[in-house]
Image (cartoon, rainbow, N blue to C red; front, side, top):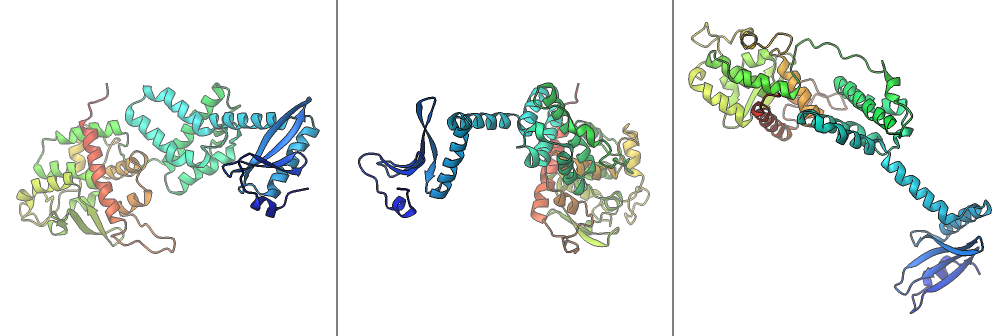
Length: 399
């Protein structure tokens, strides 16, 4: 007689394993330990075999009967349900080994030993943050151009167009490796040529390659000009404010004890807070005895009273004297440097970075965020940024 839910619930364990038949070869096995398993008994080639249909109550009576019926359909077509299940498991294992993430990590492991460490770290971070979460688990051979474009669009929509182009390039490298190793037929990234708008030339040149950044920082540390210009050069990459904001920095707006610089952003007429790292505070402490009695942190060299700010050409002229060309770096370029590396290398959230750049970031309702938004996270970010610049500066030049 077929089983019922009531009979199954009331079935109690005994000293020996019990088998409660339901029909069609299916039965419920009740173990002495109290566990209950659905089993199916069938014959193939004159040989009796059994397979599991699941554990009760995770698999209900109705679900077990559906699995039994599916297995019997396979038998009717001359297919052994046990062998079919094994084949399916093998397929799943193969697909997992051939997923985009598995192939991507294999490609990375093969090529990264030949790359500069900072370059390798940047690529794997890009894949882990922007690509793997969305298509990493998919079989690489099943990823089409529209699927890939949807992932790349996510990066573009957050305003990181250059990162989107680089991510697409990295995906193409992974696909071509998959083709070469027999796990994909073609590279769908080739179909997306022209799908992204081109990256426009920057209005302000900037160094964003970490190795090159280290070279620029070491050159600035060796600058032999006046102390205010020396300090302005060293502070510029640490705070990455607009050049005019740096030149017009006033001692009255800086609280060295609280490690904060507060001022009004002229461009947007909004209040802004720059958390000062330990390195930034040290630079300002060094400069304060010289210019601290005046209004401006970086006064004009032609105005001894300190009531006029440094020339807008002072930092640019210093960069040129150090041999850093106008096509390599500008005063404004420190902002692009920070925006790119904080995002792509250090992995900070784009909204934290945008707030610190004093861009007009707004919430989903269109309201501008206040100046203290994400301030604890921004303090941490600014200190990690300063530490990272120290690390780059300490690294020897690449051979």
